[in-house]
Image (cartoon, rainbow, N blue to C red):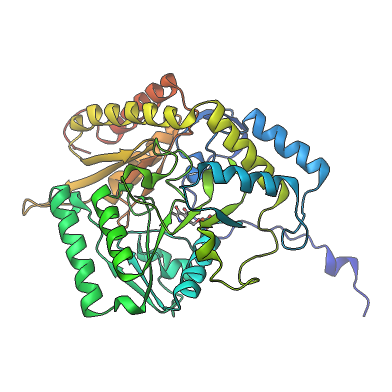
Length: 441
Ligand SMILES: Cc1ncc(COP(=O)(O)O)c(C=O)c1O
């Protein structure tokens, strides 16, 4: 059959699928550090970092140089066929920052893939089927990862059947329940024990899977005592504790890993992605060699995992985080951001809660009802998020109800940039709430 030029190259142009949702109308021309320069000629202070990805800021010169150098050497060296120096160097360097005992690593491309790989590993290692997740957790969009995700029905509705063997236990979301943190933790641990007694037998349970800070679920730090309770129960029942550090890891919370805020907690499997390579797609799964050895060789892998350019960028990212003390910077600038938000919030009646850890801040919007209760106000959060763009600050929303605005600056963010971000956020609030007038819109 002859293929004509017409049938191969047509006049058709394609457009982006309506299945995607754009948070802002910004088209980026170039970006550096905390700043995005739009094709509209405007400069935007980026407090989204590509959903917590550009840890060392946009286009950090050392990350750019590492990637450029590697591109000229080899781009794709499929890592279960041949190995390459960035892969070996990255693996060695990850060892320096991983919790002691987690000394075996393999790679994938995205957070979702890494989550699925971790589940595969936990099920193989324990020969048990069930996974317990915690309400509001986000673990990705591929079908198995979506089955583990309870941060909103939009992530799992409409394409059932989902993966079997997933069970959900409450998360200690103190603000939502209207309790203090201790009461919420006691409740959530009690409910987990009840789940393990009533439906999910410990001997059938492979893993507990949780984020150290719920990301898409509303920027909720997991209380240390809850993580400690999970660790204790995991040990007692022979369950694998998987910590999804995809969003909270790599220095973002002011410690290298989010779970390090909970003394004495070490995961059995740790998942990292996002900030690992400052924007290049690579994820890693780490566990003790003994646990890894329970999976059969060849059970993990993939075409692009451990890509040479991404691995070189990850090595440079670790070096920059170390040399520029970015974990300390995340803690100090994070405190500045949260203090500033807590100062601004009382001026606006629509803000119910301000919370976070390091450079992860969530601002929860609520509305008063006639019966005296407060309900999630997604419209307010959306309006504020849109307004921040108009004021030159890029932000995102999150939370199952969509009523939380989240701020996720780069780890290189400066004192002046946080101050400027707070000013712009306050200006957006003022625009939406028509001035400092207790929630009137
Ligand atoms: C905690 C967490 N886990 C997993 C994922 C999925 O990662 P990816 O979008 O790279 O598949 C995300 C993405 O936002 C995440 O925040």
